[in-house]
Amino acid sequence: MRAEQERKRAAAVSGTTRTETEPTRVPEDQPSADASDAPATLSALAAAVDRCTRCPLYRHATQGVAGEGPKSARIMLIGEQPGDQEDRQGRPFVGPAGRLLDAALDEAGLDRRRLFLTNAVKHFKFTPRGKRRLHQTPTTGEVDICRWWLDRERALVQPDLIVTLGATALRGVTGKSASIRSMRGHAVELEGGARLVATVHPSFLLRMPDRERAAQERAAFVADLVRARTLLA
Image (cartoon, rainbow, N blue to C red; front, side):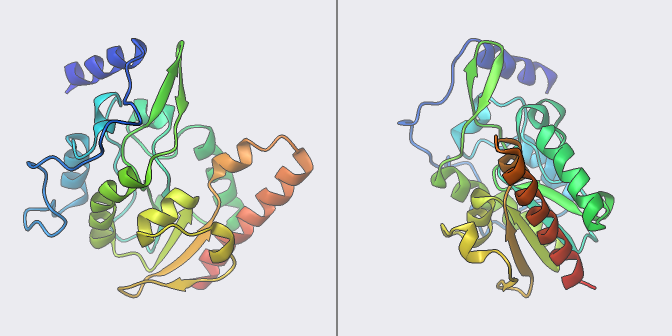
């Protein structure tokens, strides 16, 4: 496994990366959405995610990053994809956006240790720029292919409430493109009984140059997390 990760790092440094014209498809040896041999535990699922080759993103990422948290979690937070630090450490939300999320969760009265945190896409998509790796937004095709893994996580955890962080996460859950603005501020009933609360991704807050507006948006983000907590009270 370590040798494979080093090979992927070397490819990333050399500047090789997937082109936008390369087709996104599920290889024939990958399981279908209704496969009976789908991983039955979260640990087995995490190991399977790390071996995933369902789309070309695995070729240059260090590793696949599955969700993290207790199976008994009542709330599942879903982001877009692993970032640079998540890709290196193999854990979701451990970079700058993760630190902002941790602070917001504390303000909202939510304990991260009792939540299940994951991403709609399990591999880091990026463009190399010297020693840096710049984030690239996953395509809808990549999100839809990776939804197989997200659906398995949802089936194993069975959360009462799902909080989507950003538009990519929203598509990963619903399978449809929708604006956060149209979904924000109220809970939506999902098939299977779970409810959905849509909000922005914490990286959106980090990118805002206007400090006053950033403070306002951060307060709104915390309010969305408070709403999620109170919905389960």
